[in-house]
Amino acid sequence: MSAAFETRSEVAMTASTGEARDFFALLKPRVMSLVIVTALTGMATAPGTVHPVLAAAALLAIAVGAGASGCLNMWYDADIDALMSRTAKRPIPAGRILPSEALAFGLTLSIGSVLVLGLVANALAAFMLAFTIFFYAVVYSMWLKRWTPQNIVIGGAAGAFPPMIGEAVVTGQFGWHSLVLFAIIFLWTPPHFWALALVKSGDYARAGIPMMPNVAGPAATRRQIVLYSLVMAPVAVLPALMGFGGLIYLVVSVTTGLAMIALSVRVWRRSEGQPAVKAAYSLFGFSILYLFLLFAVLLVENSFGLMWALPKVIG
Image (cartoon, rainbow, N blue to C red):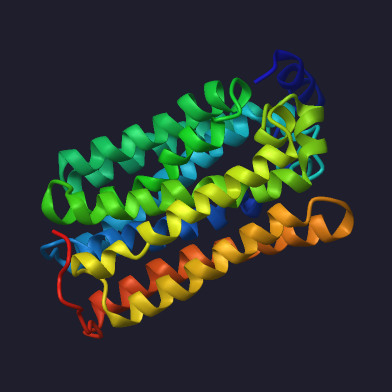
């Protein structure tokens, strides 16, 4: 984070004026909710069981760890957040919370969440949570985001780790189930974020962030959105073919995957004016629903006995 921003904020404030909701906002609650769903799905699809109380405690630790990494991201990115209309009202650039307070809050939650997960689950799950926090807060936020247009592609791994952590909680290891879930999230991340980046490219340019539309251009970004969607959609069907997704999942993954491809193609074809903006926003909004539906269906099928399994094709 720039020294100029931190100095300005610290001089202007001698104590935090933030309320509890401001500290909660530092945790990126929308991202936390997605982490909860994907980690819980990793637990539900894992080949094994864990005591419900331990599972709940582990899930809480994973959620807090995800929030902690979001807090550290906001602390480091406060200087560029202040330059972007989408993020200028966040607690730190808006002046409601001191950068030093956000840093202390994020570090405390990071350490606490890892220790708790190690106590209620196992060392592998705790190590993976610690690595996820490090990857998002340091590798992505401090390095990739400001250095390469592939920031979202590589950095997307941080958001894809929760299913693997969830499986590690149950089994003490991770296998093909969670690796496939990792791949789905990893491939979903570029079209999801690049759709927004097409609309917010001016914000990223002002902040000096090398997002794909600002570096490779909108046309190349649109082509890559289509390519990633074409690869992601069939990968998302794999849980049904591998036996840990059932008939409901197969129908949902195929239909929503086709919708993702169709919306991506529309983004590619509508490249100018308001139609282009509407197409990009439509893809961005639907992509959130798409990922949530995939994991929610897997979770319901595996947790509530609604699995009408297909003949196992893979694995």
